[in-house]
Amino acid sequence: MIATKRTQKSSILLRQYLCDEVTRIIKLRIFNLEYPRGSRLLVESLAQDLKVSMTPVREGLKSLVAEGLIVYDGKSYSVFNPTEKEIADIFNIRRMLERLSASLAARHMDETDLTNLFGMYRRDDVHRYMSEQSELINVDKIFHAKILEGADNPRLANMLESVEEQCWLIRAWCYAQVFPKWYVERTIEEHLGILNAIKARDEKSAGAAMEQHIANGEERTWEALRNSAMLFPAV
Image (tube, rainbow, N blue to C red; front, side, top):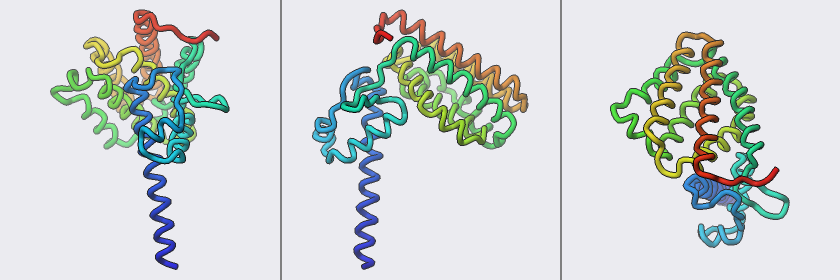
């Protein structure tokens, strides 16, 4: 009986590991642009490619649907491919939610976490390090995740998850490999401005600084999209 329970537990853990790993790989490929926006993702083909059964692939795709990176129309899966209006809507929602997140963080955030966030920007090679697309997005994710954690509002975190992932993916389309130097400098400057307001426990200033940061990011994104002559689906 004990051996049977152990076997069942091991089987469950293995299945969960496979699901998590498949999710991670597909997500990485989406952000690396190996799977272009709008491209169909076939369960059987992915299973063969990843050398797993179709079950963890289906579970992984469902997880990414929840994150907003994949769309399921009831028949097939495809990579998120928004209209221009949907992009504008996403940024509008994120701007308001991130403002609230920063305001709450100014009230609740732990000093140790705040100090650690400041530390990310004190690296001697921070500008070069963040110029790579994957690294800037990684630092940006940590920055916003820690502030959201400091806001101490799980419902807000759930609301923001898919919106943030979609924004990061849209930026990945704009800057395929390397972010320009000016982009990195402005991002660091804006992040430090938000952190300084949180450190001062100024809820209003922290919220305003975050809202402006998201608005600036949206403006930079639209400019990059226009320069790339990227086409989006009709409404």
